[in-house]
Length: 59
Image (cartoon, rainbow, N blue to C red; front, side, top):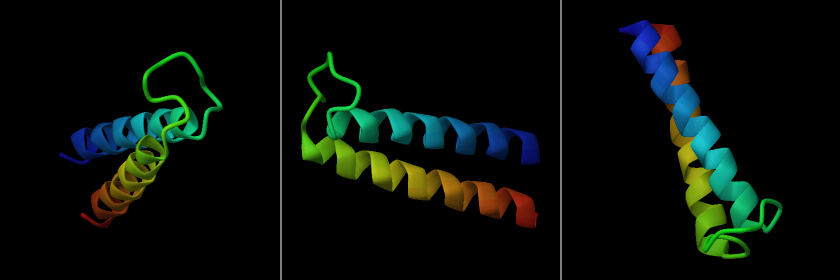
């Protein structure tokens, strides 16, 4: 279960990073580019991913 939680956490952090970078227009080329809503969503995903990672290490 720890391995699955770590994989999910890593995917959430990576996806959140991509959303954040597209939201602040560092990674252009999609409908998300330059839209602050996606930057906010990216930050939320990163925080959730870190939370899952911390939870997985505590088990």
